[in-house]
Image (cartoon, rainbow, N blue to C red; front, side, top):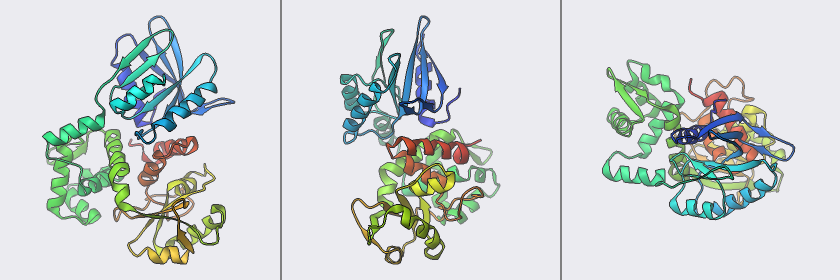
Length: 357
């Protein structure tokens, strides 16, 4: 079975690069009476096969590592005696690698850090994290992911066919409202960073999944904090289920887009949402006043400024309303969560609405 999740794909490539070790994904997702996980992975040597139950966790930091360790400690207890838990993630710092090894949490990351400790084999590979390598590359190469470049990345992920046009520069100008010079600089930056290549005066994406992963990293680490306004809750302390219909009804009037958990639920019908992310225009004050919301540090409704003029979900005939945020934005929000149900929904959105054919 070929996995579609970009992080899992990259981790499998790391395993396949090693001698005498093969990986086979047999079930996605994995469901048993006691466990719901991202998949079952068989690691095979010439003499034996070890069954791992995989959990994909992204953006593990010093602030979240203890939660991850605690989660996998309990996760291990829910598995059968012939099964082992395996952390799948995109990149780990050297310190976090050490922490996981000390706690005997087996892992594979997309940059080549690997720790496997079974009765059949032992493997520990520790390499510099991709974030460190990206930083070193940026020091050597003046091309960096600026706000303008991230905007172009979003458009290319959203509409990769735009690069096939003979007038792609003009179309990007119309879509982003950037200058022609700004467009050319951004495209050149992506070319220098090996995300796109140029053939016969046109560009094409080299690896859609790699570009998506890089944009989501930019979104999580930089862009979202720039877009973040505040979190809100109803003044009269209504539960989310009683305000969700109002959020849909007022979206047209106040020109906001529904994303996050609520947007994912509307798109897939797969969740009973308890939070929402609203992508709002500049004059957002009238929105929370009209909806009777108040700022709250633990509020279930997050306001983000619209990051481009191209934020809305296009061709959403299967969605329940026309005011959803782009699936790229919904997916990026869900991938920030540790909740199994949200991560599973993110995979549904990726496979159905994002996966580049």
